[in-house]
Image 1 (cartoon, rainbow, N blue to C red):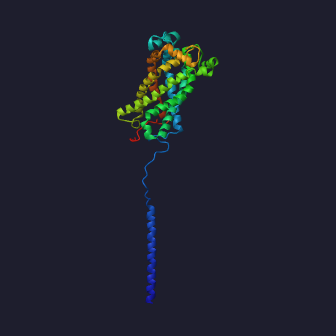
Image 2 (cartoon, rainbow, N blue to C red; image 1 turned 60 degrees about the vertical axis):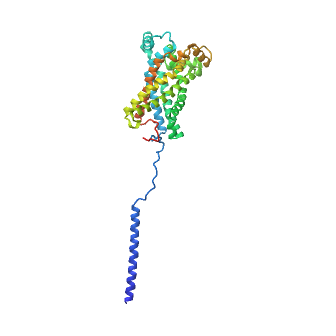
Image 3 (cartoon, rainbow, N blue to C red; image 1 turned 30 degrees about the horizontal axis):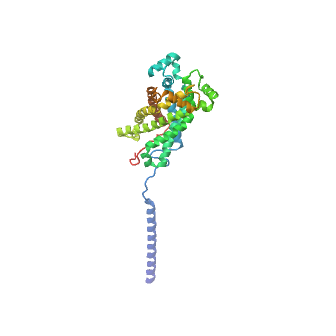
Length: 360
């Protein structure tokens, strides 16, 4: 009897111990499951499409940049039409318009009325919207793509070369579309009686000279004018803005919108004057080659050579230079300012080169 009770007790205790151990094991598993597993530490990687801590930069950004570029170029070039009319008249006929920049305004207004100062406004506004679309949009596209290709550190070390290459590529494309509008503008300014407007001028140029002769007679000069101008404009503006920020001990990400706008305007003036001086000889040549009869009746290169020989480099480089510095300095500052404003309005932030070793 005792032996039976002892065996039963032993069996009960063994069962209870097994039950207790199973219960503890289940509780332990539940506790372990409640505690998140430790994950290995992994360095944060940049978000898709981001470069130098900015972005993402995709199709939407490039379209925003193109739109802002079209608006800023159309507005600024259109607003500067009176200055451009005076500048072009001085270049084309310095013997008549020999009373200086301000005197040129008075001469044109007295002889033809104040409305003559707006000659060529329509082709200017239209042509430079298209040109600004491809120029500013193209510069942003090429800057971003070259930075991706080279890598962030290499792009930072070679940022001036990237500015120059991006500007040259974008401007070449833009000039293909700009040249017909510029040919019409110069013809209307040099001879206001040639046609009553943009459409009539374009039609007459093509009927008299063909598409290439009418629209692209000045393509080579416009490349020599616009590509160095745009390369200087973006490279000098980028360097000037960088120096201004460094002088203030700040950077774009730490500045207010108003502060960044002031930097854009100030660096734009510096860039505009530098670009005007560099590109002025080709600008003078372009103005003259689009004037009827200039350089003789031979081919384009023959006419360009004749004009250069007749005028001389000094005259091409200095005639109308002050007016162009005023025009381009103001225009370039306005372009960078309006570009930043429009980019902000469409919710985009302009790409800036930053040193990867000192992330912002």
